[in-house]
Amino acid sequence: GAVVSQHPSRVICKSGTSVKIECRSLDFQATTMFWYRQFPKKSLMLMATSNEGSKATYEQGVEKDKFLINHASLTLSTLTVTSAHPEDSSFYICSARVTGGVETQYFGPGTRLLVL
Amino acid sequence: AQSVTQPDIHITVSEGASLELRCNYSYGATPYLFWYVQSPGQGLQLLLKYFSGDTLVQGIKGFEAEFKRSQSSFNLRKPSVHWSDAAEYFCAVGAGNNDMRFGAGTRLTVKP
Image (cartoon, rainbow over all chains, first blue to last red; front, top):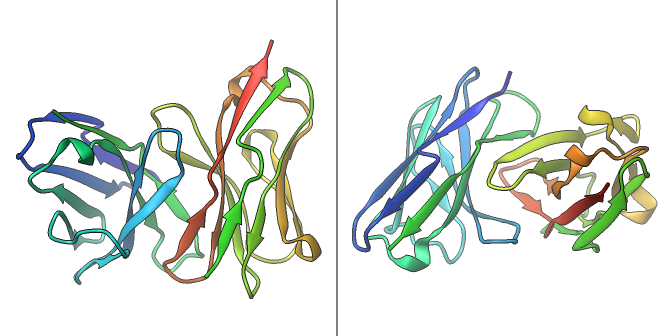
């Protein structure tokens, strides 16, 4: 149980375009989902907390207009990187916390974004 | 705010040898503690977690970790390492809200 999927697993796009990444909890409901960014050989950096039916909470230094987050249902959150630039190239990982459960996050497999 | 320190960036052990990965945390109250493993290009898999109770926690793949409040530590151990254990290991601390902090990670290399 507690499986989280991400789509796509890899994406290459041109600079200036927008890219949407989906995060789904497959076998549980997740009121709260999280988006992380991971640079090569680095740890995870929390970008934002996504709550179903409300606006996401962004960490300091993360541009909310650039990284649009939508959490429209209890099983789906999306991250849209708008007007992507090469410096946005990274590994993006989402996680979901079981609703009503203890404080455990289950992670998706990640999405590798390359902006040319 | 809570923080996590993993003092060892890279550890190499021989297959069959024992393993201990160190994790120290800083938090004012009793934290929620986690160990995750990440294979190259993959997401994170939860190995084990500690919330309360028995301070020795058993996880998947033969891993265990011990919470030591006096040392603010939550070290991960495995008695006999397998080649498939080579990966990046992350310790994390949660504060009972939306805030989870990760350590910088320890990369484990397993020698044949």
